[in-house]
Length: 217
Image (cartoon, rainbow, N blue to C red; front, side):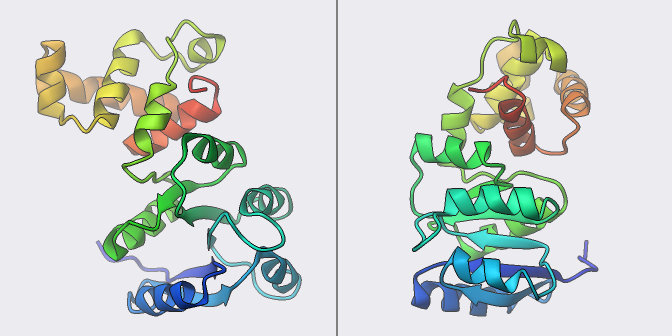
């Protein structure tokens, strides 16, 4: 399906060669416009005082001056509708969790292909929370049993949590059906219930939403 609205995007990345190359490649996609490429969040902060706020910022974490995590927190406070999508080298568990707690809209590694980055940019704008496949297991491993207070509030049952784990492990709907000894249509039924409870439209968004609500630690 064609994307009707061009996405206005700022890149905040201290590596000059990388940010210029990334902007050039992203601008080749007709659905994306990199209107600003900046070397620090401090530059972005000043521009946001006078420029039209973009749809999202693609932001590194290890920035000179204001660190990326602090930048994400500030953006959430001052520009709550602006989406922050992390694109960085570090895939350490602690860093991933800190970024999600700071209200990052997704977490990508620079090892991702350009095609993946473009797809994830659209997923963010459409309400998803993309995570690089290398960091999904960190989040998955932190799923608690649904006996927690947060789990009770979300009304997730044991079967839904199990399906979420299997999906994040890369299992197909058919594989999950075999694992749980149920038909694929039954898996689809549980998925609809899971996504409805979490008010999401994708597996990664479900994992991130559960994390933010306390089902993930």
